[in-house]
Amino acid sequence: MRKITHSAEETIKFAEKLGSKLKAGDMIAYKGGLGAGKTTFTRGLAIGLGLGDNVSSPTFALVNEYCGDINLYHFDMYRITNEDDLESSGFYDYDFENNVAAIEWSENIADFLPKNTIYITINALNETEREIIIEDGGRFAAAWN
Image (cartoon, one colour):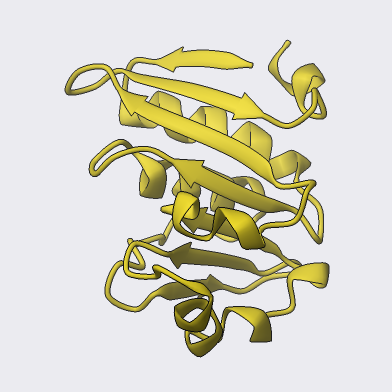
């Protein structure tokens, strides 16, 4: 599935729809460069999960946790380069089975993601427009009609 959004607000609304369809155990793996809109998209996911919009980049913290009926773990794997780094980050200590995870720079841990991971590529087309590509095996197709 491919979508073009024309503003940050439109990106958030689009992600909010997806967030409302997420369930415990879902893992989102982002691909996209610096400033592509991964944190903005995560803000929409959080709203859709009923967690509010107080979302910030986990760049320095490695993970930000947003708590609710289902928690959202928002990871930044930019500095993770191997399995030892991933292990020492505490990644495996999180309860992924009962919560949702959104992972920025997921390509750095691609070998360690579950096979049912939802991949979202975000490309900045210009200052405001984003191309969003969702690879989810068609699971969310009905949400976009």
